Length: 268
Image (cartoon, rainbow, N blue to C red):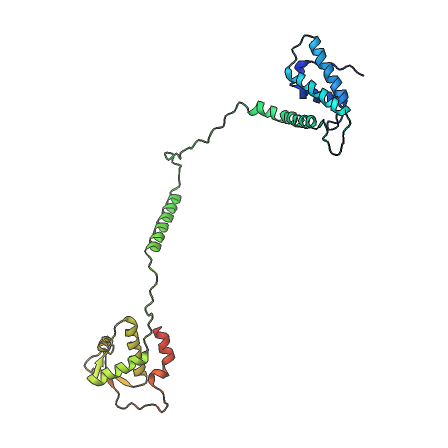
């Protein structure tokens, strides 16, 4: 067998020495030939003691553990039910091997980044004193955009929702037609202003006006024109009278019924 020579200061501990012996003998770490490794380990410890070297207590403890495992391996045991005496040692060696592999990766990183300190990003305030040269045309366009934006914002802020001129309840035109005829018959004549005075709301006023138009259309009432006035558009002063020559239509329908569809659409 080739003589193995080791120095105590080469190893960080007993596991490091055992791992070196396993690699030197090229054996499987999960199937350690415990007798061979134990003998070589004891040879190292004895050599270190013969050289008057202070052997650390952990090396001596590991030597006793190896002797115990070696003795257990010599005893007969049921391999199916009893645990392998080497299992705990193998687990420790595997973890130590992983740690050494990680050390090879982390050591250069520690050398590069170990002396650094993490520092929060500085908040740099905006320099408002710097003024960049600007073209006059660009400044005018910028001001125009600002004014347009502010005007649009004011319009949007002050804009009120649309309020319909006519809303429920619906005012039937045919009912207003009856009232118009009754009003004119009682007073013999009536102006547009007088007829509209009977209204109590804007929809009511519109219904009265449409009723007047429908009565004129069917010639139920006529407009009284003043011969002394040259202007025929008298507005609310326009007077109406009942047409005495009006003949009821032969059909069994009222004026309001004939024009119901158009009137309803105008008052909704």
